[in-house]
Image (tube, rainbow over all chains, first blue to last red; front, side):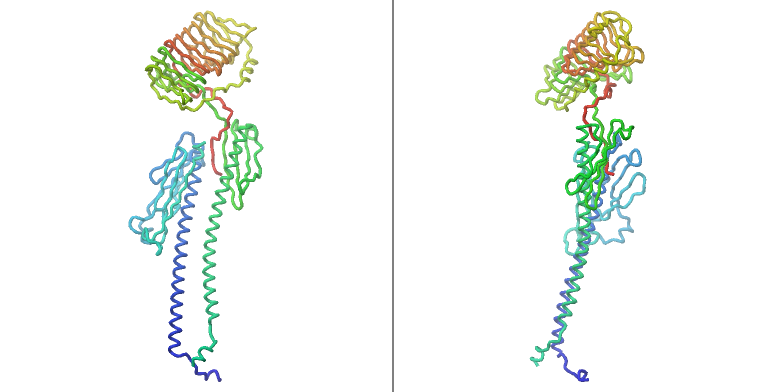
Amino acid sequence: MKKLRNNKGYTIAELLIAMFITGVLAAAGFEFYISMHNQTLAQEEISDMQQASRASLQDITRTLRMAGYKIGSHDPYAINGDSLYIFFNGTQPVDSVLYYLADYSESELAGMASFPTGSTPHKLMKKVNSATAELFADYITDVTFTAINSSTVQVTIDVQAAQPDEDFVDNGGYRTFTALETVNLRNVAL
Amino acid sequence: MRKVFIDNDKGSALLISLLLMGMLTLLAIMAVRSSNTDMDLTFNQINADKTFYIAEAGAKRAVAKLNEDKTWNAGFSNVSFNDGTYDVNITDSTMVVALYDTVIVTSTGTTINAQSAIEMIVAPEYIYPFNKAMFADDSIHTMNGMLTDSYNSDSGSYADTRDTLWGDVGTNGTVTIENGCLIGGDVSSSNSDSGIIINGAPYIYGDTTSEAPVQVLDVIPDEEFSDARASYIPPSGLSGDYTYNAATGDLEVAKGTLTLGDGVYYFNSVILKNSASVEIAPGAHVVIYVENQVEVKNSGNVNNLGKPEDLVFYSKGDIVLKNGGDVYGVFYSTNGECDIRNSGQFYGAVVAENIVVHNSASFHYDRGLMDFWKRQTGRMLPIAWREI
């Protein structure tokens, strides 16, 4: 009963000061959280980007290493711009695996972030023999296949983040990553 | 009033601190979890790469082992190598007869959480010694208007298939080409110092290199000669005119025509002279092992109805072809001299330690010999490789 009748309170000044301090702290906290969140998202984008390029590169490397396996005088591989044909003997006398870049369709692009002019990514496709080509990796800006010598091919994959990163200035905010591997064609170098 | 405010120890600092700490901890845990996944991915990648190279190391060691001992098929089990282990299995013709001289090496590399396997097919290295018109281990000397060109006995006659290329001349040592010679083919030497000596202005229609890979010549094992000696019962297969000296093992044809039937022969020496001719029975393939010299001097035609590969001489001694008629044959002597001069036309190929060709001898290489008589060099080489 005694407590109910307690009419001690905070003065308006106290309240204002308390609200001000709380506000500043909350704003700082929020800002911190937002930047942490953005960083986490950016980090995820970077991880995804690296993972996509590494996984693609590993698959290409693995297949390319085997190029020329038991196919006699058939060419082990063929490079045509950003397409790479790899030939070896697997399920058929000469199996072919084709890696190439394909453009996104209008409808696919509509569902994505708007990319700055000139940096519209492509999708990396993999086509085994006459099967339907499969989507292999997203947001690939470029792949380069370079024959270093008769038995060595260098593969470079440039990939771009799916979302822009506010803290990144270049390339319209889209971070990029390049994965590179020099592949020794075991069957050619024998 | 002021005193009351300061004394007021009611508050929620602890609560707020706990809340804030909780939130931060949650954030930190999330970040750690996400980077843990990345780290796991990276570790898996590293381990996968590692096992691949461990497996490859195992396979390479197996190839080295096979080069020491072709019959080795024990494999390796659980061999520690760079943070992992490899196991190698060998499959050869003792397990699968159809493999013949081929060996399949399967190597598996293992580390924690990862495994890679490689299959390597290993086969003996073969060479084709008659891939040139003439090849000498030590030296070739051509002079006084000799010429080389080529034809293909598998496709047709010399007139129909003649080519002014492929009459190649090669040596591991020095080749000397004098004025007036015409080489319808490449000239190659493995001696980059002074491997090719050209005097005057001979015609060389092909390429010239002094950096050719060394070609191993010593590829006829002695057992082959002793096997031929043991299995040949003289004078079987011989008909027509000839003299065979059973005591010395010398075969001489001094007149008329000797006809050789299908089979493998062994003689101490073979001498043709005085316009004597040699014919090969229709459809026959003749291989003659000669312990010492082969001499075809002032003779008539040799095998001029057949293909060079139907008359093959493997000799340990000298080969002399001079003042003769047309000769169709293949001559191989790893440590003998070969002297070709004043002859009619020579069709086929010659391999010897030293070769001298002079006085208008015409040498027509048979391109059909390029893949003739393959020989093992004794080395085992991987011929196919795949990851499984």
